[in-house]
Amino acid sequence: MWRIKGCIQPYEWGGTRYIPDLLCRDNTDNDPFAELWLGMHPACPSVTTEGASLRKFVRKFPDQVFSDSERERWQDELPFLCKILDVNDMLSIQLHPDKKSAEEGFAAEEAKKIPKKAFNRTFKDPNHKPEIMYSLSTFYLLHAFRPDAEIITLMEMKESLHLVAEEIRQKGLPDFYDEYMQKDQAEINQILDPFLKEIRQTEIPDNPANPDYWANRAIEQYCQPGKIDRSILSFYLLNLLKVPPGTVIFQDSGVPHAYLQGQTVEVMANSDNVVRGGLTPKYIDTQMLRKLIRYDQRNISQLEPQRVSDAVVSFQPPVEEFALSVIGLDSGEKHVMTTQGVSLLFSVQCGFTISSDQQKIRVNRGEGVLCAAGVSFSLVSRRENQVFWVSPGG
Image (tube, rainbow, N blue to C red; front, side, top):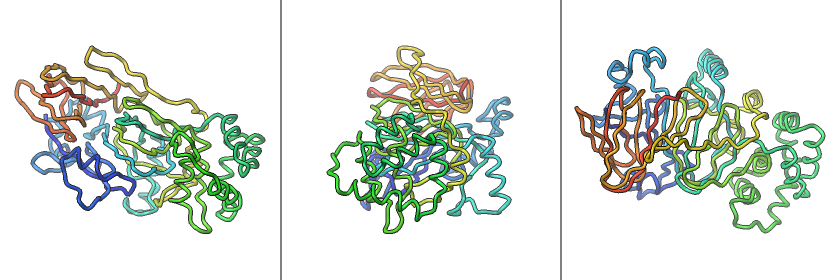
């Protein structure tokens, strides 16, 4: 077992308090702390307590971390990546590629010798990025397209969107959206300028469950004179969800989504591939978005917990790279378990102690402990606690 410390991603949409407080760090400059990564992805690898990159450590001692079958299956890579997010400002409209598209896109950009950190780089690695989010607070997000009838009803409530609603009624959403995303900026401005005027002349209630609330915020943040962001319509096209703490949503490949506000744990395949469609200063790859976006998945992909024991619930998405278990610990209670595959455990509530026959490690909140397969261990917390346990899926 190895205690690890996460890597901070200071994206501009991040909050300034939650993650610094989690890590007991000062943030007197109010810098954004958007994400804390726990894993070995090259873009932001965790470090061991000795200060070594987890990526370099695992590559140097793979036989200590992985079983023989895991080394063959995962090619000495952790198959999953864990993140803790503090979403203060809305994220971009985005989706993630499937495995084949990621491999092809990565190979094409490598052949063009586009630097991985270049502004116009879409594929950072050759992996797909299915992911789940476990909400730590009341959380707002956009997730998958609404049914056509619901979209039309919402838009008909806005006089400025009647023509858009009628076009969706006649063509269906797939044809409308594909054509819409190809329009030049002048056409987008012509379509959406009446909508912006209507929103600005309307008294918008302070209600995040109302799509107008988010559209108004996005207009202020992303629309400039002569350049209206086409993805303003996303708040009416996609399902707007308000989920309570403990809710798990699965984002499959090709499903459009955007996180809007709150704190969450994310678990995903070990990838940083994001295809963006708008509401961001980052690179927008409209062509790839149109190619990969899915219209067939309109349902809310909420995962229900499977009760494993009195203390443990499990969430199993339909992927092989990861599954999530949540272990509830009472103060002073000892919980004994055995890893079936390489695993990562962490908590955002308080520290815990993990012990095996050979080791005893105190893990602070916001840190993680990486465990090899076949390790029997016990967990103890001084206070009531919740420990996230991530391992490969079935």
